[in-house]
Amino acid sequence: MSMPLDTVFAALGDPTRRAILAMLLEDDMAVTDVADPFEMSLAAISKHLGVLTAAGLISQEKRGRVKWCKLEPDAMREASIWMQSFGQFEAVNLDDFERFLAAELTDTD
Amino acid sequence: MSMPLDTVFAALGDPTRRAILAMLLEDDMAVTDVADPFEMSLAAISKHLGVLTAAGLISQEKRGRVKWCKLEPDAMREASIWMQSFGQFEAVNLDDFERFLAAELTDTD
DNA sequence: TGAAACGTCAACCAAATGGTTGAATATCGT
DNA sequence: ACGATATTCAACCATTTGGTTGACGTTTCA
Image (tube, rainbow over all chains, first blue to last red; front, top):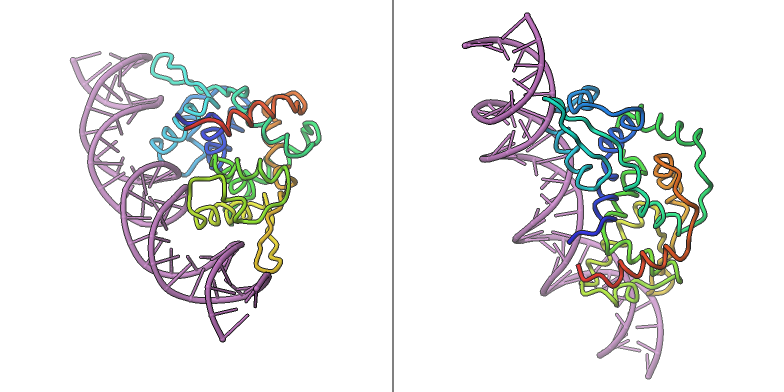
């Protein structure tokens, strides 16, 4: 019986998966479109989406032959509360977010 | 070159390591004392502490033959900001924290 | 009807992870 | 000097992870 925090944090530990979540913040997307910007097979992205789904961080709904991926931000709630308890971090600052996100997406690692 | 978010989230993905962080929230501790409540070898705990140190979540200072472990809550700052950006989670609620913590520590998983 | 698009499955692989044990290294107290 | 304490190191092992490729089942549409 794995705890929610385990799967959520583990899912967030991978940069590809964090990038996917950031993409879904903009809009719901089909699996193929999620995979497009990555230099990685569709099957690999499909697995990453499975991990995100298992963690509850996204949901997937099949309509026709297209499977739509939707962000489920509530899944981060417990994890966020857990982290916040270790120090009083400032409230959401969208500028900070944009900066971190840009750094993540442009880094060549 | 691994990004900070990678190592921080990956480190938080393990329940033993989260329990260690919760213990260090109370007070600084020696490695042996950290290991005491776990049914696991000292060497295993030493490795976990290495992972937490690499992520910057704790620091270790050797004084005499004792190595003291100290929580470094600032390391969660970027990760916390990243997460908060996905939804506006309520401010810290210490009761919530105590509840989650208790659940984590008593769960037999 | 049949080809193209969408996505998963299965088998495989290399590397990382989480644990063990036993030996080694410091340091402390007597 | 010596035995006990504190911690790490090294070798090993099983499992998980993140990726690949090729075959497969659906759904669309011309």
